[in-house]
Amino acid sequence: MNINEEKRNSDGGADAPAANPSQQELLELLQSSRTIAVVGLSDNPGRHSCIVAAYLKSKGYRIIPVNPKKTEILQEKCYPDLLAIPDPVDIVDIFRNTEALPGIVDEAIKIGAGAVWMQQGLSHSKAAQKARAAGICVIQNLCIMVQHQKLLR
Image (cartoon, rainbow, N blue to C red; front, side, top):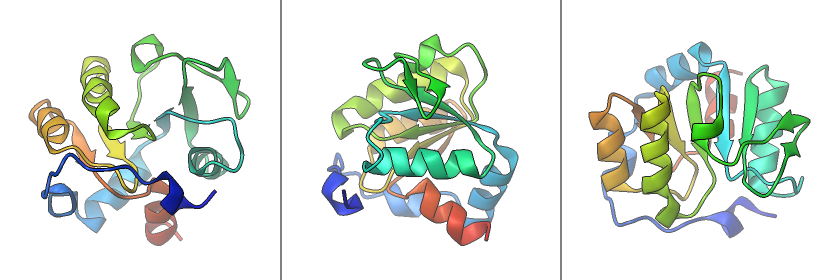
């Protein structure tokens, strides 16, 4: 499946690209992070979420799948939501629809995640503002794999 087929609608937040961290800040985030919870991770190897998670795992990141319908994806234990994860999470990488973003951000705040990464095609200005107010770094409408490839060649 092509990435464009999985694009999601924004809530109309015009601040998404402008409010993203700088390229240097993204580089530092990717270099300092070790654990990435992938919310909405599919076990279908053709889905963008699975491709991205497999890539990140191949680059040494610990991937924690978040999908309430699965018990294991990419040989990693799957959790039903962020609150069920027993370990600290550096980045919450989101592959869900726009309507789910506020709830996921609320969970990211509760677990003390370091960053919320809304994949390409995803943004939600109110959820992003709430996360930033809680001290969480927010990235919107960017693919973490593409940024990793670009910044960490």
